[in-house]
Structures are given as structure tokens and as C-alpha cells.
Image (cartoon, rainbow, N blue to C red):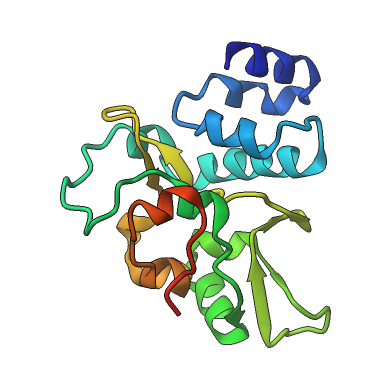
Amino acid sequence: MDHYLHSLQEELPEHLQRILSWDFIPWNFVKNRHSDHPNNPLLALLEAYSHLDGLLDLESLASMVLPTDSGGCLRCGSCCVFMRPGGVSGRTYRRWKKTGVPVALFYNPVKKKKPSSTYTCWFNNCERLRMCPFLLMNRIDSKPFCSIHHRGRDSRPGACSRFSPNPPICQTGDFVPVP
């Protein structure tokens, strides 16, 4: 991993350099999803992390002791890497924006008309993200976790709130989210 981070360091804009030292970024997932760096999706993901750092206390979140009862979830991170939660209504999107729910930052309108009736994820600066920008690594147990899960169901896409873990299938990414 050090080689990967070192090669990124040489190619990233200066304002993103500090992210390379963050031990709570899921670097193994980032490397697997972005092995063709430098590219726009990688830069968009790192910009998303930088933006979230200003909204959420990522350092504290990554250092929290997480509940051991996870409802059958192994916290492998596969769902956050492979699943695209799909669209939300314009009403839901506008509610998220009005109440300051961070997930709204990474949704784009399906149609360019304003206001759109449907929004879809994961985007940053109109660039499609290859994984969920809210996926982080916990410093205590070194497992992935959702950095907005603690905010409750209304702060997450419906597909994420309704997702039912199905180990070991969910570890492979070959799962179908529960509607």
C-alpha cells in the first residue's frame, strides 16, 4: 500500500495531499477501485473525503467504539463499495438539502431540468464515484464502517437503510439489495 500512496502523492494536487496520511480512509478499497489513477473518479472521491472532513468530524468518527451487534453484518465493506443505492425522489433530495443531510452532496439530478423529479448517486462535481464516499475504516477494530449510519435512517439512502446483510454472499459483491 505504501507504494500506491507514494505514487499518488506525486500526482495529486497539493490541496489533497493531506488525505494521504488519513489512516481512516479505506485505502485497500480505493486502490482496488482506482488502480488506473490518476483519473477523474479518484480525484472526485478524494475531493469528497476532503469536503466531508469539513462537515463531519472524521477523526472522531473513525476512533469510536462501534456496537458489536451489527444485525448479521460482517462489516466487510462490500456493500458500500459495490452497491449504488439508486434514485431518490426530488422531494427526498430537497428535504436532505434543507436539513443539511450530507448524503445530498453526492446526488445529481437524473434530468437536467430544475427541479428534477429524481436524483441518483454517487457523484461529486458531476463525476460518478466508484464507491460510497461515506465508507471509512475504524481505527479500533480496523473494519469498514458507514460514517453517517449513526445519524439514522432518514440520513441515508433508502437502499442502504433497508439493506439486509447476507454473509458470505455480500462479501463478494454478488448481492442484490433488498428493495
